[in-house]
Image (cartoon, rainbow over all chains, first blue to last red; front, side, top):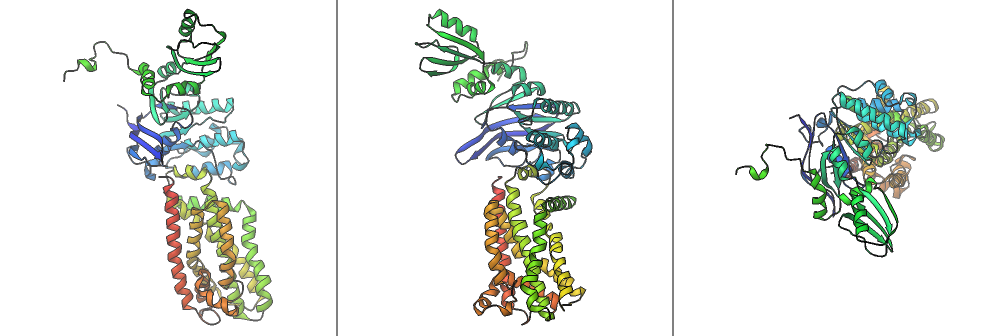
Length: 317
Length: 248
């Protein structure tokens, strides 16, 4: 088993009455690229804040490189991009990169970092004068300055144009190939598909799924169906629905089967439209708060039974 | 230790990039010297020395209240602050870096004052006494520096600036920084020893003149200064703890 760089054991974090992170248990091993997906308010940033030493958990244990992340010494192998970018507006790009480099024992050469993140031409600009996208690129670059073993990136490409986004992806992939471990959150399934082998889906502070990209993709592969009908359509295959007068919006994994049911039930309908649901929609149906829905969603998550391997039932007690 | 130097250096760089801050720190005390002190003391060597010391204290107080108070409050509101908390640096190294920035600033503010006093008055305490005064200026700044840190950690930047402005005039006037304590109205003379700037001035004068002010040293002011030191430390610690607990 490879070394565990990040470990959380039954970690919860409350803010007053709000439970931002709820009983999360998670390991990140050396060499992994793990994507954390989830809608806004799912607890991604709070989880990352606990992993990077910004906050302590209300209960449970958090370990970074086997130690307490709030101890500065345990953060020597960590590089971070926070969700919000912000650098001292009066400092130049090169100065900010140099400043961060001074915190690490064996940093990358400043010019190498500037080149890699396409900041070379901006090196002498004060960061207050950068565009939002340039600021974001700088914020991502800062995570890599210290040649860390692990980078934690909170929505690294939010606010970047397509070209810069691809640049950041390449840099993350290159770092991964060089042995770096990456834990990143994202709103974009596409991004996680490209970069990560493993996906953790958070919803309402809990881990709803922790699996390979392919398995999670299947889970969130929802279709959105719109139609007008005066009578209720069959809802057996529907994971969620909304009704506005005669207009129904439904979400289902198997839209073909739903349409067959609809026709078989002889429901009168008009204006039927089927399209892929957004990731946001998919999360919403995954994060339905009732336990039944969660169990349903978790089903494809079960590992396939291996031939010859004893199942739980067969293990002698 | 290297990190301390790094944090001091970059805080300094950041502040120097806003020229108006530098200009105001340099100009305000010297201007006050020309307006308030010069017309009254050009022939009076001791008076000139006391006035120069008083305006040096004024300059250092500006730095304590604005650089620390407003500066810390401003940085707290920026995402740069939580980001730095994820770097491998301890909180006290960052804070100390911010405080050490004041030293070069004090020099930048006080040197023009000294040149002005030396060239326009009969004041001539000698180099050793001036250096002693500078050292005591830094030591005596502690209560105000701590109050600045407390302000910066307790209040949002706009409120911190407002409170700093509110403290500025009473502390300067009551402490005898504009008019030497001996020439203050009777009522003000009674209150004067109780403000922290008066004790600060007395401490600096012990170094600069070797005999304190025109009427020697007010020991009541020194006792009150020590009291303010304790109050400042308690306030700064409470505000700092509260700020840290926002992250816990």
